[in-house]
Length: 135
Image (cartoon, rainbow, N blue to C red; front, side, top):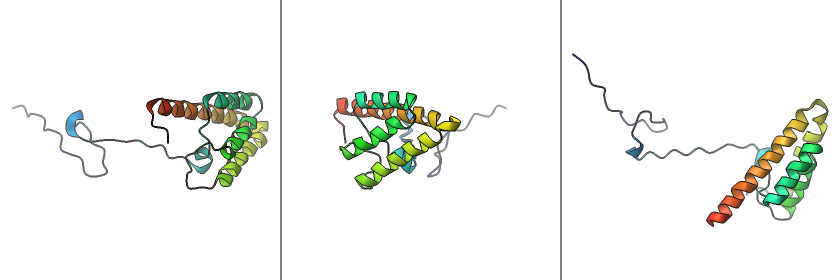
């Protein structure tokens, strides 16, 4: 005698539900946890972010250093509870790390990825502005 498969039971709180129908009403939200240096990257206008990526590609840390000054000009970051000067110095520290470790290629690669993150954040900012949901 063949046994019929059981219907999926609801998962306990905190556990992801597996095998449940999409209409079960479970909302899953994924949020990236960022460290303080990564969260200090400012949301800049797209052209400025592209210039910083270009600078970071050819002179490691230079684009990150320039982006630090955009914080002083009012660019927002993912660190709203920190003072503007603290976020500025976090960006300067990231630029110094990139410059000092560029000798062993780590800083250069980090600098390029940092510039790519700037462009990604600028694109997200542009999409939110188009939707009218700019914070």
